[in-house]
Amino acid sequence: MKRAFNFSAGPAALPLEVLEEAAAELFDYRGTGMSVMEMSHRSDEFVEIAQRAEADLRELLGVSDDYAVLFLQGGATAQFAAVPLNLLGEKVAADHVNTGAWAKKAISEAKHYCRANVVASSEATNFDRVPPRAEWKLDRNAAYVHIIGNETIGGVEYHDIPDVGSVPLVSDMSSTLLSRPIDVSRFGAIYAGAQKNIGPAGLVLVIVRRDLLGRARADTPSVLDWKLNADNDSMYNTPATYSWYIAGLVFRWIKRQGGLVAMEQRNRAKAQKLYRAIDASNFYRCPVVERDRSLMNVTFTLADESLDKAFVKGAEAAGMQTLKGHRSVGGMRASLYNAVPEAAVDALIEYMASFEAEHGA
Image 1 (cartoon, helix red, strand yellow):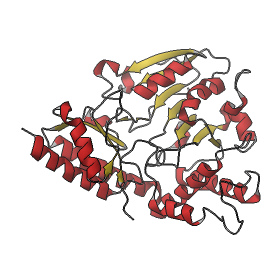
Image 2 (cartoon, helix red, strand yellow):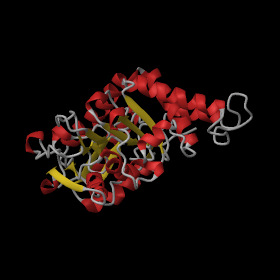
Image 3 (spheres, helix red, strand yellow):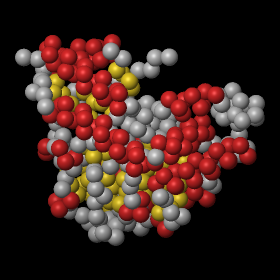
Image 4 (cartoon, helix red, strand yellow):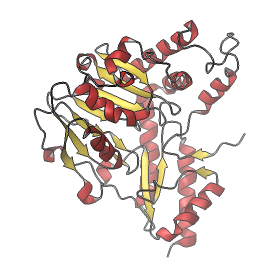
């Protein structure tokens, strides 16, 4: 079996071991005579799958009992609305840091429910960095401070958790959760779409401090009410059962790899290798300032954008898929999530060198 090197930003590469395990259980999950896709979410078998997945996730991230862990639907985009609906309480404003496309979408959604203060922005420099914390103009009366932990489109990542005082810090960590260790206790809430390092699309994780539950507005849709979902073990309505099951397999795979410390070491090595190749070339360029470059989504441009199509076509012929950058920014993007092997980066660097030798000045 020949597998492509998959650099997709999401839905993204899954570990081959996980796919093989799922395939082995596809038609008959542990003697039930049913696929996980077919069984009731109320069955003993699925409840065990769900409970083990949550326990493994808590172990990987060091999530204490002070936090609820939710396995929901609607992706991170639905949480752009769920965050203000659940956290505003009696407050009328929330602080947002604008670092790119996803931050802008979160701000736009929050404006339906509150005053969304843009307390810092890197738009003036074409979103090539995280605005330095010293420049943030925070509102001490804000309900929360919202950041995008990693801008998947622009390739900009927070490498440190910003100190925002006593106001709850909320982060969309869709493309970084489980790529490295994090101190969950520094956050009021974290949410993450699954289709990067967690599992297949259709699932979103929410990790929220329990003392922040129960603040939802009266007009909050039930499926977006965090407390209601926490009280019902994420089964207020039928959950994305198969995505939840695959996520559980991924959590166990990460544990077998050595946990998040090992994941970070691998991911950092992959990203640094690719950035070194880009920086050593006059043909390729990364538009992000070095200190804020993403370990997950490496963005770069060619010296002549008219060669973009040829670059992508040649990469595909060489077995490397989905390197074309997001349509809103162009260029190239290599997503280096946990399941992307270092061999994929080596192959990409070799291809980039040969392409430059053929098309460079």
